[in-house]
Image (cartoon, rainbow, N blue to C red):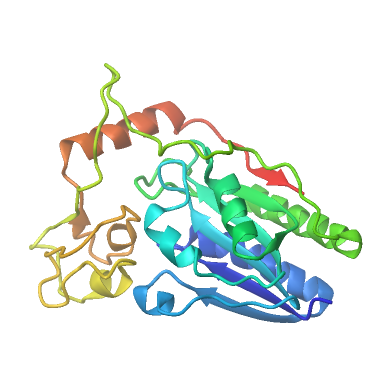
Length: 271
C-alpha cells in the first residue's frame, strides 16, 4: 500500500526538476497521497543515503551526460536503500540521445532495492546550448508527462514487481565520446568555465549552485575541483559572466547544434 509519493532529482538547470515534479506531483494529486521532494543536486544534500520504504513511490530523475547516468553521481546512487519502494527512473537528455542512461538508472535502482514500474527519457534544453532542445520540456512534453503519469497509475493495482522492457544495452556501453570530422576523439573532461571579470558582480551565485562545490567562494573565477559540465553556473548567472572558451568544447557544441538543432527528438516512455 503506497502512502507517499517522492519526487527526487539532480537538476543543474532545472529541466530534470520540472519533469520529475510534474510526474510525481501528478501521481500524488491523482491518488490523494502525501508528497515530498528531495533535491540532491548540491553536495550538502548527498551526505546521507536516500532511504525509502515499501510504502513509498519514488520518481527519481537525473540528466544524461555522455549517454550515461552522470558518473560523478554513481557512488551516491549506490548508497540508496529502496526497501521495495516502487520506482520510476527518469532521465533528461538534450535532443541527441539518451543512449544507455535510462536502462543504467533502472538497473541501479533495482540493485539498490527498488521495484521499477515504469521509466521515461524526456528531452530538455541541452546544458551546453540555448538552441538545442530550446524551450523543452514544452506543452507537448508536459502532455506526454501527464499521459505517462496516467499509465503508471493504471498499472499500479495489478503491479507485482514484474520487469518491463527499457531501451538500452546491458551490459552498459562506454560513455559517448565527442569526435571531430576526422573521427578523432575530443576530450573535454578537464575543461572548466571561465569568468568575464568585467561582467562578474561577485554575487556568489555560481559558487552556491555548483553541484560539485568546485567554485571558490573567495574568488569566483577559480575552479578548485571537478567540473561536470552541468552549466548551472553559466545558464543561471544573472550577468552572463561565465563561459567556456576551450576549442574542443566549442567545436563539440557547434557540431551538436548543427546535427540536432532542427530535429525534434521524441521522448521515450516504457510502462
